[in-house]
Image (tube, helix red, strand yellow):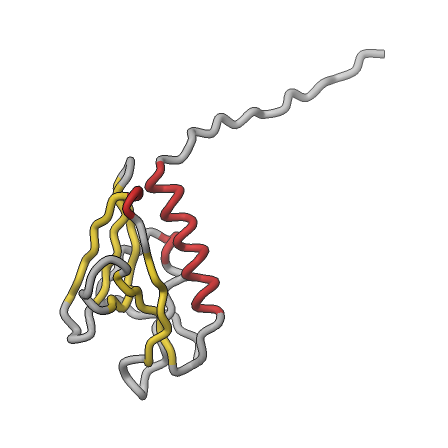
Length: 127
């Protein structure tokens, strides 16, 4: 009696670049941080190395092999982008009061792996 062997598919995985790896970890941190926010708070990022204030995070991206970018608005509502090398990364996540009282708080964690790059698109906040 002959036996049939099914060959296992071997998937070759290309190692992630430093930027892709850091991006994925930042997405996990942001999702975890947002899970602890209440309905009156949104996520923002503090600049650890200077006095630029905070950036209300609207998006996160990367450019291989080693650049991370944060998109959002500063405290005055001015569109802001931080471009940083992965070896210089130092981020402080902050809970800040949401901007509009009538709107639900902005949550970005669910959008980050979907290729969303920030901007003025609608958010999917839960009330």
